[in-house]
Image (cartoon, rainbow, N blue to C red):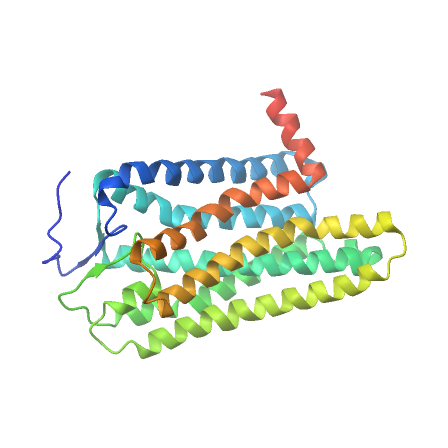
Length: 312
């Protein structure tokens, strides 16, 4: 494999370093990376296939699970293929257009996933707190419209990131210490004033996603209040079980997201290879775990998946 001259990169390209210091172990590192990625793809495509084939699953809750599966596929696919190209073939070069495109797609799908998780919380709130009107409040058409609003919101808020960076000057240092093009990682190598980029990126991450989290917390606060009023222990357990899968998905997704975001900006004391590992975990493990969580915790979905796998 050819070794790139990192000291004099082409002016129209960037170089992704991969995981500094662990170059000798790339082949071994690629095994869990590719395995987790493939398992995630299989799990999410299985959910999309089963829900698409089964008319009984054409309901708002399963439509939301399909939206989550699509965002999981988009998030992992925007990162892992390029990372594996670095590990397997030492293909570290990426064009400016390719870098900004990857950044736009990655952050757009991440914000879209946050909107889907918020809509899922609202779905659980209506199902538990207003079950008699669930069918009229949350129809498939309304869920589709909410998904479209989430997508438009994500595009409008993320689009300024690559636009602002495309106006920045990049001097001799075009080396990005990462396996993919993340906004702050690219902004750090600019030789211009990136104050606007940094402030906007921080506001977008914490205000938009923070607002989503506040609304999710509000939904679960109302759910908890309604659940505590239930006298029947069996009904109480059933109500809580309907929220378990969503809470698990929220915990894995947002914990890793905020860890990755904070370490990019304030984690100067963290070793680069540790930070890059955790940043990749955020885009690898939730897409693998989410279909497993919903497959285990949602009986109807589990039964339908078993029906098709046993048939095969």
